[in-house]
Length: 154
Image 1: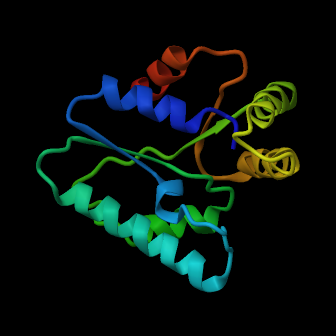
Image 2: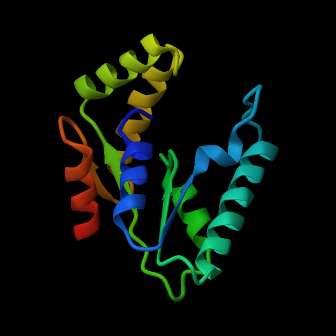
């Protein structure tokens, strides 16, 4: 939330051969947004269904997926439901320092894209990423192109 996930993934989609991009938020875009056990199960089922379809489609070499996955259990559950036998998976957490994250989120709040409560939630989730079993990339003060190149080199 505010670290540049969607922007970086959209850039990667254009840079990588035969690629497709799924933003997990698209699988849970509802009004009102409700977080219940049922909706959590539904969004995970939606994500895994789409990712497996992309995996099985011969048109795609590269599948790019982003979502706020601030708990290892979320990552593990998604991976456990995917047919990754013939895939190389790269699990990456994009992070940002507190100053950059607050600045980005504040700009979005002023544009009406986000609500003020996003800052505290994002700060907490950004901290939680530090203990995940992922490659961490700090996006603070970096160009999208530079971050995408680092991801491609992994």
